[in-house]
Length: 194
Image (cartoon, rainbow, N blue to C red; front, side, top):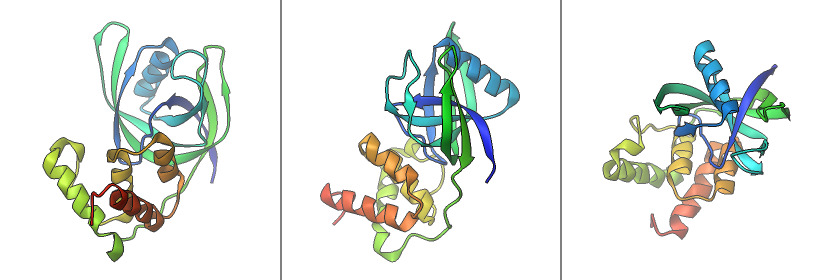
């Protein structure tokens, strides 16, 4: 797979493919980056922070992230840009560097798609959990629940109260069946399913 250059926005959260994220942008480096991405209609990368902080000196990003597509932008308060993002494909960071303004530019490659498979019979309760979430919080799921193991795994990983390291592990793995097995174990341990 060919590598390409991508500006990164390291955060204390994980964006999943097909997921959504609201982002408040106020640092000059990210205002400039977001403006360029809006103007050129291109995504930027979101990665969980491995070490460092969201503000100030460039934080070290995890090596797997997600393309962030801007679907809405608003600036009600001067100097503060509110972005609504949707997650695209996953990518792997090959190398990165921080510029003089501390904006990270990375060379990345696509992580590749997972096989599209239905939710395995032993993991069917995950669909029931998503249906219960949709009934209790209709805005939590923006689209109809589908029988796709990758989609179900990513939705549960973003909606369940998982630690960020666990969310990152869910993003990095390439086996939708294993992802669902791990999430099933979490649901059982927390008595969310029988």
